[in-house]
Amino acid sequence: MIEKNGARILIGAMNLLAVGSPMLVSQVSHAVTTDQKIEKLNVASLKSIESTWLKVPNACKARGFNANPVSLESKEIASHIQSIYASFGV
Amino acid sequence: MEPKIIRFSSEEIALLRRRFEKLDEVTSFEADIELASRVTSYGIFREIGTVNDELARFIFDIETAKPVRLESLKAELLEWNGLFGLRVFSTDSNRLELRTKGFYEVVHPHLSKNADESLHSLFIFPEIVNKIAQNEGVELVLVKSWGTNSIFGGFDPSKGYYQTNFWEIENNDALKFSNLIRHGKVAFMGTHDLVAHVAGIDRNHWPLLKKNGERVYEAINNYFKSAPKPSISALILPYTIGVVLDDLAQPPSYSSKNHIAVLDELLLKISKNEIPANLPTLLTQFPESFQKIIDLSRTPNIEQKPAEIESTVSILVREILSASLVNPV
Image (cartoon, rainbow over all chains, first blue to last red):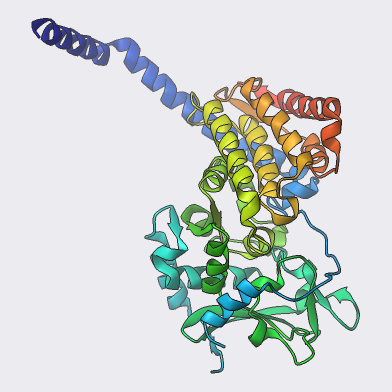
């Protein structure tokens, strides 16, 4: 038990050291800078790719329906779906 | 009882938007069917007759056997029997037919048909459509961020495409989409969702679809684990994967072996981390081979040519890398 408590204190102390570490602070600020840089670059990237994007048919409709009109053999709807419509009144 | 036409004032639209914005990011239709019906009806209503109208090319005039003109398609919101919905019609023809499987099932038969079984209009009620999906074991949902950028977003018709398309890349939407699919959920907020994902929905294909959704979710999640703010260069491959998964979630492409073969290769490629997800880069052009990948995934029996798939996916990655400037000034 004592050993466990001791271990907890040690881990706690290490956490404090880590939080107080200038390395950690610089890493955080580096991350913020990198994120901001990527954000700016992403805005520039989207502007930059717009003209080539428009030349790609599927990119212009990101989620296009992959189907062509067909002649349907039957226009009847299934009986269980008819029942659903009937349950809402006619 | 006759349907009653509803015209939203700008105040009512603003109120609908405020109610929508208070929802969780993903909200089941079941949670608030009245609000979901209004939002989705309004979403479809806004797209009818515009470049974003995905229903149009499947609505034919019986006399001419041609699709009705896009500009002839109109919509009006309505209430009927306690249901909120909309009516879609063409000023060119009152004898219409629908030419994709499952489309008739999401159109109210009694209200929409002429005596000769042709359609004068398409009466669509999201609440009934929700029951049809539930019957197939699929949960229809609203997605707040998507609706904010489409239904309530600034669509510029002069652009010829939804502003959301870029937004889909930037926000890594494939991750959100795969997360819905793996949980058996489908967004229903516009014409694409209705005709491409809900019409013809079939529970028999969903176990495999969910499995593919899971694979995509895991792969993209792992790829971005160390990059909370990825570059656009890093987002192209996930976007491509998302488009292939979107096809697989469409009834005509359910369980398609050609799509799955291309998806397998894309997932293998993303796992190799060849495009560093967190590297600050400027992407100078959208890769031409994106279209080739999508076309390949739509080519029957392409799964029998794995070398061609591998080579095309590799070209996509190379193209992204060569168009990416690292640390530009």
